[in-house]
Image 1 (cartoon, rainbow, N blue to C red):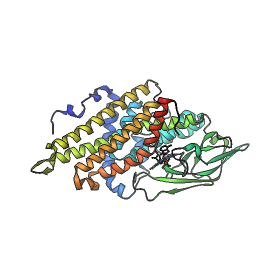
Image 2 (cartoon, protein in one colour):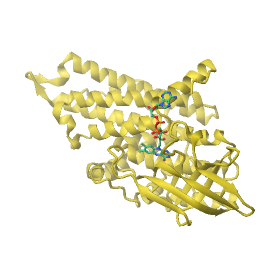
Image 3 (cartoon, rainbow, N blue to C red):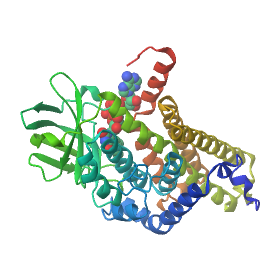
Length: 389
Ligand code: FAD
């Protein structure tokens, strides 16, 4: 092990963080190491997510943290990225918990909700007293959400919603459901539905092999009647859907590098200590080349995320870059984690080394929030102005 720590940060990325950002990263890291890491293997084995974790995350200032006001710590986008990185260093499920609450629930309420909705819901979502979920995907509407069947009909003083959503993070534990639905004219609108509303039912997807700590489920909506004030009033069509997704994808771009970074470190330690052919594995050129590629991809990915975060904080529209970073960082992270597993031989398969859990989690992260190839098509469309969908 090299005693000079500069090898860990060859691009001096740390020096581009301000004191507040460094403190947020340090506090989140300490929290994750102390509170999440010790039980992650057991929780993953048992598909266990403690709902009260949301209250802890709220106390730590990790929920809805980019919202302006309503009790939020009002951190910038770079800090939000650093939080995602630290949480996903432990498990993608914990980053998902924060991403959904922050980017997919608080973000639309803050940006498209009425003042009353903001006051009623944001403070408790930020504290973790309420848990939210975001229902866009359906069994037959995944990569193409415009083919959704969930629909709403407007009446004088209420709406009636019918349909179903599938693969929804937090559906089994949520207190409020944000549900996207179409009307007869195919206009898309967003509805806020409290969990005890008549006609809404959820079930758990039990047999997941990935993101096992994060509760995922289905939502069935049967003649759900909600008052007019439960529509989120200020959405503007599909642009608003993508505004939520883009925020979440930005966090994912940082987060997956946390998984990759953990696995790189674990396999580096392992190969430095594993004696094979009478010398440490890390003394072999092939192993060193693998370690070099891992560090290069992580450093380049983080550098691009930092640049993207700074640009977003300056108000730039980053949607092209976010597609690029979500896609590329997921792809590179899976490659890094797979390589880590290989370098550790049979031991790389053991749960206590964490690698396989990260690997199967990244299969989800590669798929949700726009699958890898869908982002390639989005990027292709930006370049050519030709829609291949
Ligand atoms: P499909 O759309 O059927 O795609 C299958 C494959 O075909 C993919 O590889 C895709 O890239 C490829 N493909 C599709 N169309 C094309 C094309 N035109 N050209 C080339 N290739 C194509 N959704 C929510 O709304 N809220 C949530 O909270 C949520 N949480 C999730 C949690 C988990 C654990 C998982 C696994 C999913 C979650 N999702 C959620 C759903 C997720 O967003 C969808 O799974 C995703 O959009 C992909 O849809 P699909 O699974 O139906 O795959």
